[in-house]
Length: 286
Ligand SMILES: [Zn+2]
Image (tube, rainbow, N blue to C red):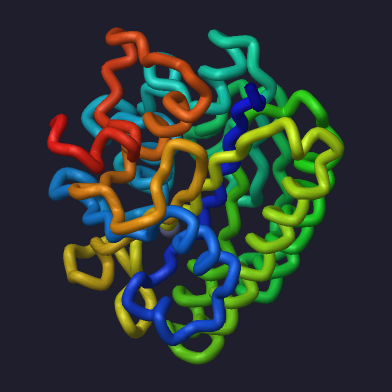
């Protein structure tokens, strides 16, 4: 039986409604092999990066993980750890978390969100500008691809790309934004190539999950409850995911739940996950 592995790529602030007009062959490929589905950020969760990513990575909602904004003070990651930490600490798996958003990776601004993965790589953007964030994402992609290809015992990874969101905040959801989404898709393609270049690739079954945290208003910005802001999405492919329509009632918390399921790990009831594996939500089990 092949080894089970999971790659989660988080791309910050990607509007679902703009995707059909874009040249994004790699995301399209994941969707064609599995699904791409709308996620509605639930009514209790601010449409902000911190709470949404915390829900994605822990599998529990804001009432449990305690992240209500982009500073993570008061978080409960000690009780509700992210999946890269739980897999490493409790299951002896090898995990990676990599990206450039400070509180995700450093003990600053109330972080880190990724408290103890096996490998953690933080690459700071050199400035708070779209260009600097593109450079950061490029460096993240190079480093992540190298690790994905060369570390034989890697089991699960989270790669964070932040330039798309930064571009919307500075330049609105216009041509620069669309170009940034297409650039992020090319980076996704290089991460997928990196998996295929693994010497052990033929003996592995990778689940790939691509997810965004929230949308943006046309003029750039989020945090409110407009349709554009509260619409996120998840795309995924893998051995447990039939190609076809997305699961019904897809939620951010399902990402971590599916990571555990894809690795053959039954969640302990004490984890009190709020998400469910994608494979079970295709049916009426819930
Ligand atoms: Zn965000």
